[in-house]
Image 1 (cartoon, rainbow, N blue to C red):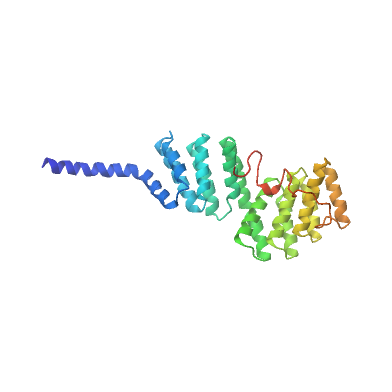
Image 2: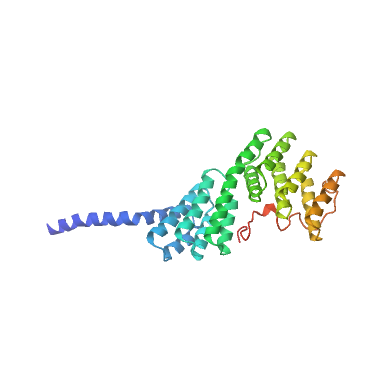
Length: 299
């Protein structure tokens, strides 16, 4: 009789124990399904001094991010660096959730991942990283309609081409290039029945100019003029190379702008017609780097 009573008390105890442990056990089970990339990060979380609910918060956010399509190694890097830099469970989980939301919206996530990872690596305060990431995420959302409008009127691009164009427009918006200036490039490319790649290149050239110290209105005027004259991707690259070469010779930016305008009026600045530098066209403020101040790509 006593043994039966003991068994009846034991079952509720075991059930309660299972319910308490299951929130942590379930993420562990999902980790086994995901593969090995998250193993080290998960182990670091479990061995950390964080409270149990904080550990669960990070692990759950990591699972959501991976399920949404964030690469496992990126999720693992964010978790590991967040722990190393003392970002806190809430902030680390928020970084993962932000990346997950972008993928759930079918938006490219690479720029945001790079900013988070590099910011953590360099010890940038988590609050500053969060501010940059939120602004960049908003730019990605705002960039998509511009790219979609471009795609509707022209030849359809691949998924990767569309994502690259969205990222390119987001970088331009990040450099405070006006929305209207970008939209006009789209109109010019559509009138020429140009490709999404040409659109992206033109926007990127404008961003590169601004990143190297040119005023946004000068940069947009030069690129709009180039597009009106039917410049190709190679021609735009020549314009970038010209600017970088001139800056290396310590030419004032204003002189570079006027020199470029003069050459364009004379039919220059076309691919192969200008002096070619030994290096690529990208200068220190390249729009293609995807970097913010102190926060570039993965290291």
